[in-house]
Length: 479
Ligand SMILES: NC(=O)C1=CN([C@@H]2O[C@H](COP(=O)(O)OP(=O)(O)OC[C@H]3O[C@@H](n4cnc5c(N)ncnc54)[C@H](O)[C@@H]3O)[C@@H](O)[C@H]2O)C=CC1
Ligand SMILES: O=C(O)[C@H]1O[C@H](OP(=O)(O)OP(=O)(O)OC[C@H]2O[C@@H](n3ccc(=O)[nH]c3=O)[C@H](O)[C@@H]2O)[C@H](O)[C@@H](O)[C@@H]1O
Image (cartoon, rainbow, N blue to C red; front, side, top):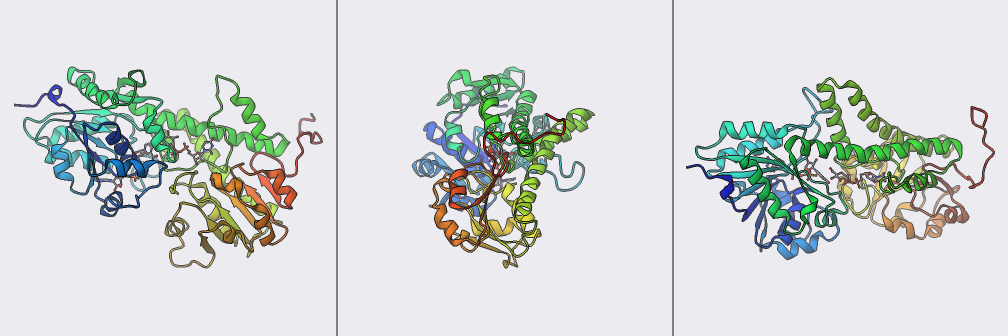
């Protein structure tokens, strides 16, 4: 007889995918739910070995302590997927959903092959009913495909409920975001079994999240909300970055403009930090996915609107690289440049879609030698990102920022690491070639202090050498 979903108590959870989402999410889940056994499985043996070792595969503040506290008690990492899936009452699918690199939708659509292979494996091995939760970010209506694959391969007497439960954590603050989420979305089928499955997952979150933050909705709304949230966040940064270009051309200061905008309570101050451009594994791929979905639905104006958010980001990254060359007398051939920060943001070692990659490649193409320092990114990763596996001659990777700066013509800040703010820039200046430049792509340094030392300073959204009352510029409209 088929097990009814209503009869499934959640005692054991299995999560497929031990990445930036699966690892931290399940670690916090295990910490907050001592009555639930959580097993994170992955086919990548190296990654699983790292989760079981002293040095975790990813860096996230406070994560190591949680893993150490729960691992071996109610938190397990394993490559042995079949028993973990068979035993679980609830399964999270938390695998990567990258942009397709070939075939229909190449360069834009999300590749769901990993999600589909999880659904196939679940149906093949499980002999009792389960709740399957889509944690990965997926195109709207993906749950329907998962249901189809499960139904077509299900063993007799077994049934599934598929829920959408997108993740909103940001890297570098994952533990805090998971512990204190703004909201938890749970999308499910509008049926009795669907509602029971939603209640079961809701019960898991209720161990530490208050009921008012757990939002139940239809599956498609939940899937689309995730793509929309990322698109809105990236759009805000692209918007302030677009304004930064206007500031540089007019004498306005983007920090002052951002402050003024953010004080409007309807807009709020967050995600208005102008930068060298946004990076990370998800904004680009999720917006491309939204563009592709819109085009597929013949919503061409909608597609063009969101595409512009990406185009503006490309423009910003290129603009910064060009500005470095221009300021250094229009040539950087054979010049030595130190790059401070290679991760896509502070407090992570992740370099996926990092703007630093774009800037570094631009400088290399112009013939510069790069001296790169990042507190958390491994040397091998930087060389891989810059396609420099065989030939290292134009790049040196440093473990000390002062060594990276020594003998260079310029410092280029690509990541907003807090320790960069308090470095001894006089010491760096003394060891550099003159004139010595600073290009602050994150607007984190004290520019007047740097100018006093003798640096030529350039930053985003502000003219070089501009005083706050410089009103001499005359715009093209004569004002
Ligand atoms: N990185 C982030 O901050 C966030 C990511 N997301 C979404 O979460 C999903 C996962 O992202 P990440 O954790 O960053 O990816 P990731 O690449 O770090 O980890 C995914 C893991 O899944 C494993 N995997 C893939 N197919 C598998 C299979 N068939 N069987 C077993 N293991 C398999 C891979 O080996 C990899 O270790 C994506 O859809 C992403 O868009 C959502 C919110 C935040
Ligand atoms: O789906 C995802 O992967 C996640 O994507 C982002 O998180 P993440 O990419 O980890 O980091 P963010 O803090 O959003 O930063 C993204 C990029 O924007 C840049 N940024 C951010 C804020 C800002 O004001 N200016 C700015 O340039 C950051 O430096 C970084 O390069 C979202 O913030 C998460 O909610 C979401 O879950």
